[in-house]
Length: 405
Ligand SMILES: [Zn+2]
Image (tube, rainbow, N blue to C red):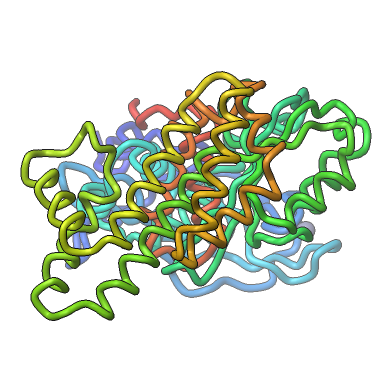
């Protein structure tokens, strides 16, 4: 059997003829050509009669063969499409403007769902940035279009990335437990774009929306979907308490004596943990803080007691305790907690609504954690679009299979 025939059988590429094969410094180079005589326009996808010219050879990365890199080589044509003008042809093995074959990209996307950054980059021998661009192309091939249908209980979350300089807004479906929408930005305008896409009919179906306590989001929700119950996410309330604790800690470290300062610097992890999860050493650190710095210990108690209140189940008990907490925090002489007390006071009903509905817990908590992990993993992607593609790829119910033949 000739080598080209053999490779044709091994690769099994559709509508592709194998014309030759060589090995060079980059790996196995396979000369290919489309089997169709008339080329396809890469812009509109239709067949075109007139070929404008032929480019220099181009290379597309294909799945490795026996640990060798494989490249498909072909002198791509430019066509003169009556509708689109002079554009390059569409080749059957790769998406327009991609330097990777469909199968290569599918394999990358499959790995992106489950493996870590280093493993994926090393195994496929591509940069993490390339992975981002790859999954941006793969996602539309697998994405369901009806994600926005039938939504009744949704959650709005903002994620910061690139060291907190940029944001994306993510909408999750509390009922089915997946991401249904995501766009760059974190203001009312961003959320308005979601409601516009949802349309007035589907907006009217919304029963509850969980939010973090940002005024921008709140306004967008009450305008687009006034019947929906607004629930403030308890995990966001807790995150704010952790932030306030951090602020107090930084302040106290700045003003402490050198030897106390060293102690306080080591306390961060222990202070943020739940008390019943503390190791003996961590408990000792908290005890040390209690002795060395009263304001910081007070901040720790405020953070902890708020968490315990939010753990409760009864609305009436929670209402009473939250009011007590607000007055305690207001008198705490810790400015970050005084500010948080004000926020809790003015959003009290929305915070209490989470006790009545039981929303923003369970699987959504897991989902939010997963989204945050993905966001941290996306560091190195060049655009928000790559991050959003990865979020959808991992959190919207897309099931990918490894490329096997
Ligand atoms: Zn065209």
